[in-house]
Length: 410
Length: 114
Image 1 (spheres, rainbow over the protein chains, first blue to last red):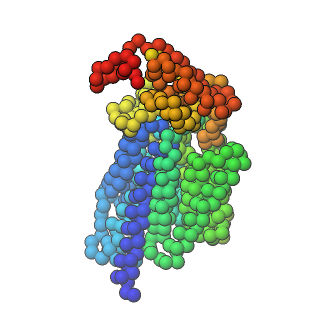
Image 2: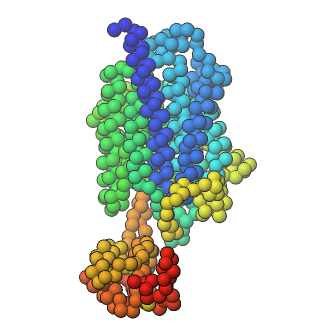
Image 3: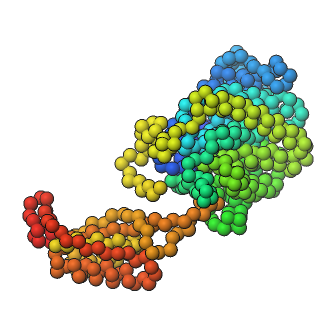
């Protein structure tokens, strides 16, 4: 087979993977909607739709060139390749761009979908109480500057890459970066009214479990592109290997969370095993191509258990995360990154740890700086009255299920 | 003319309906209701937190009948509800009706109700 045909196949697979990552946004929207209350549904969908737009546009404007600057201008920490998309002319932007694996444009659009994913993670953790404009402004700044700068340290060839830090598809670079921001924002925002009372923790139930389940299946579906596309070619061996580790870890994540739910929580909680499968997926994302399939099962199993304990833990310290985004993306993102150091002989645990720590410090500090400034300048939280009426009416003057009879008890 | 309002457990509704039809009572209204009675509250668990549900789902039956049909209607409801021995079988309220008008024909009183 000549290389032009192989190039076409490689590039086509990368574009299919891009489509799969795109559909994850529908998954996020459905999951977040399902695990929150009826009265905030329009607001949640509004945020999710806006984020894909913010993610793609800012990535085109500056994100791509911050994440892949070519040359770094400040140590190996920061570089900027210029505004907009600067496609190399002729074959340099096509077959020669990545040795026949994908074109410049494919590279851009695949990475742009990832950028939008990182911002979406925050949305779930701050749901049902954040001011729409404050959230959009935060997402804009975080995804335009912080995510790509942090990403350049590994995927752009920065200092962590040179140290040997490994993160295949972004347990840290995408999920933890989003997860740290989710943690900071949920902390600064405070819990939803009625969640932590004098009488203890009160559950605020999600209103649509079928939608939550559809969301999780869509996310899993999309993950084949997230991880499978991160091979960055259609290499038969690598792509199929990644499909296997990804699937096994997600499946083991369900078992892990099921065991934790039955033995620790004494119930069969659907929302927990939904989170458990996502935990397995986030966990394997860092090492999907270097962790053996059998070890992927361990990674997933531990991720699944971890997510249940983590959700209970965050409720104990009164950080209110309606959908479990912090537990899934941050906690399992960290675990998955460290797991590369444990299960892969070619990577050191210490380097993985330094990577996790570097991203943790940078993401937390910058998220805090941005979100705290917004809090001081324009406020981040809707009024008590607006929160009780629901953000659908308060922020959008619109109902999510007009014409349906909805029974509200409290 | 009397208005019978019965608050019963939802699972009893199909049988009650059958018993009412057997006694030639064909017209009634059913609505969803939430209520708190003598029954034991339900425990639910969501994401690791258990909580008690005291307002439980009920069915509210409204049957407007002529006086002769009051006893059969009450009998029909009680027959089904008393099959269960636990607490929380519900209540029946009987109220006098001042007037009843069939909207289409403008018939009033006994004629309109039957």
